[in-house]
Structure formats: structure tokens, C-alpha cells
Image 1 (cartoon, protein in one colour):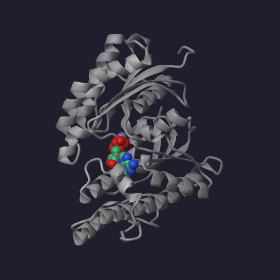
Image 2 (cartoon, protein in one colour):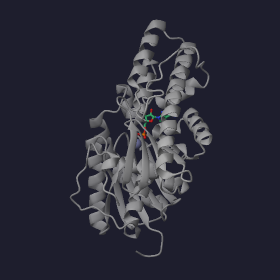
Image 3 (spheres, helix red, strand yellow):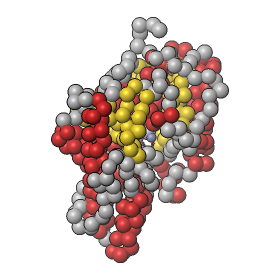
Image 4 (cartoon, protein in one colour):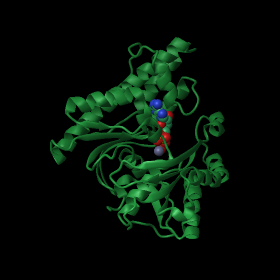
Length: 352
Ligand code: KG4
Ligand code: ZN
């Protein structure tokens, strides 16, 4: 490998964001984001109250070429100047994942560059290294629309599960809760907004799994309780919606705090006192109330807290480019016939 920091293009199409980015850097980071183009399809999906896979896949097909071109233009680079081409290969909506991966394969072939098939969850996990240069090992809280898990991140490709949701993902809980309040998709940011001026003590909602052994989560009971209250109080006034949003968010925050606390203890037991770094990534980690609660929890346990900026928490191409860069740096690449995967847990990644 040359001594110049590698430059990698990353493509993200696993859900409703079509994104491409060019990053440069050397692990553990921080890396330099040379361009980061993102097109959110929210408007296309809003009438349906959630992401429609067929619509997403078609939109990715229409948008991706132009977005890759812009990512290269803004970085001031030609394809031939890249060191590798990375794309999310799963997990996600398979139609969209195929669009991104096939494009990356074509670009890699045309430019004779290595192809890196990136696990979307690993891209979230490593976004903290792109943003802050976080060293391994760290305790990873991955909170997104499709996932809610706590893991020990030991190295690129090496993750051990401490706990995960046994039903809904946390972002899903936010989105379903928002729907009950008559808010549009995606609901997380809107709940956060409403909750700012609401009374979190007005409605009493359950805190599932609080105090339980291990670090698993559960959110479906919370959603059911919220739905019962919403029906009882209906029609909801603006005040009711604010208070319910605040009560819901407070319950989620309490559950997260408790589960993270249990996981920090486990991490300490395994890695010793000097290695306490809590990292939160994924779309829900953009939530300010959650960020503050995690800061408090980390401080009280003597952990450092690493939070990528909100724009790197939600889906983006830079995290995919960076995960590709980390794998490329270790000499890893994928064959041109690598398959997209709808399901691909982080623990299943081969150790680098
Ligand atoms: O990581 P992400 O962009 O996509 C997935 O890989 O799932 O996460 C999207 C999820 C959605 O459920 C959205 O409602 C939630 O993250 N989200 C938030 C906030 N911003 C995004 N949830 C709570 N508060 C936020 N500020
Ligand atoms: Zn994501």
C-alpha cells in the first residue's frame, strides 16, 4: 500500500436514502470527508406512512448515477484516482441494496479498483472512528430504524452481542409512536421536537426490561400502552400530543439508560477499568435527549462517550466509504460476484 492516505468512494442505498461520499484517511481516524451527497426520499414515502420497498428501489435506480457523479465532482476526483469502491451490501431492503451494490461492481470493474461489500451496521459502528478516531475496543450502542443492540466492538469485523431488542427496534418504536400521534414518517425527529415543550410526567408509560439481567431491550409494550392512552384521550389536542411525546421519549430514555448501564458493567468486567468508551450510533442517536442521557450515564460510570455528529448518525454515504476504507486498509476486498444480503448480523462478519 502506498504511504498516501487511501481515498474511497462509498454508496448507500439500503433504505430510503440514496447517498454517495468520498472519504480519505488512515484508521483509526478521524477521516476527512471530501464529499457527502445525500438524497432523502422522505417525500416519496410520506403518503404511505413508511418506506415502500418498490418505490425506494426505483428511486435509487433513478438517482444513484447522478449522486455518484456529484460526489466525485465535489471531491474534485476522477474514478481512477480512488483506491477502492465500497457499497452497502446489506442488511436492508434487498431491492435497494442490489441497486447500490451492482453500481459499485460496475464502477469497480470499469476502473479496475477493488470492491468492498460493506455491512450497513458496521458502517454505523465505525462512523465514530470516521468522526472522532475512536480506538478499539468500545461499547457500541446501535440505535436505528431497524436495530437496537449493545455490543462489544473489538476490531473491524469483530463484534460481540451483549443485548438486542426482543421485539421492535427503537427507531421503529419512535415511528409507530409518532403515527399514533398523527405525525408523518419518519417520526423520531418530530417526537423529539414535540417532546421539547411537553410534560413528560403527565402520562405514565411502562419501562420494559428495566432492571432485568443482561442488556436486552423491548419496546412493543410501550407502543401498546401509548396506543391505549391515545385512544382514551382522543381527540388529541396539541397539548396532549406534546405531553404524550414527552412521556414516550422519557420512557425510552429510562430504558436506554438502564440497559446501557448493565452493558457498561459487562464491558468493564471483560476489558478492565482503563477501557471504558461508550459509542452511540444510528439514526436515533441524533436525538438530543438521548445524547444528554447517555452523557450522564457514561459520566456516572466513568466511561468516555463518543457520539458522531447527528448528520453522521442517520444513514449517509460517508460512513459506508469509511467502513470500506477501514477494510481496504486491512487488505480486505470482495469478489465481483459478492451477493447482497437482506439479513446480515454484525456478529456474523468474519474477523479482519
Ligand atoms: O440509521 P437510520 O437513518 O436508518 C436505519 O438504518 O434504520 O435510522 C432511522 C431511524 C428512524 O426510525 C427515525 O425515526 C429515527 O432513526 N430517528 C430519530 C431521530 N432522528 C432519526 N429518532 C429519534 N429522535 C431523532 N432525532
Ligand atoms: Zn442505518
